Image 1 (tube, helix red, strand yellow):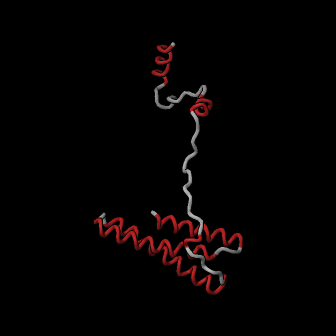
Image 2 (tube, one colour):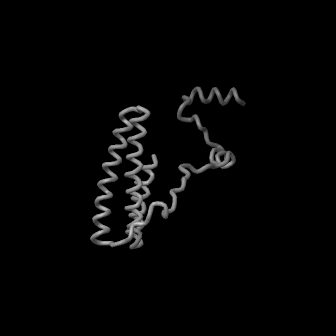
Length: 134
């Protein structure tokens, strides 16, 4: 998980660097960290004897990381010529909310006068149910 986090943050760093014209070294630092995390994942998978599918996923990620790392190093050496910061100098990747929380009141406002089961209950039966409720 940490390897994938560093990989994707490295890709995001590259996109930001392309927009701003600087910061290409951060991509390399994050990809190096991702590669190291993949190696650590290999050790954990073999020591704990986890399913081979996890090992294969880590291998696939490492191949992708190394491919991007080679390209990033080449580009930095030939085009950008930026110093690569130490990983410890980089800003840590923060957690992000994947969903937006909302209150029950907000949901109630959206559902006023909406028949939630309109598509699921046949019209004849729906009429009978409405009569029973009244």
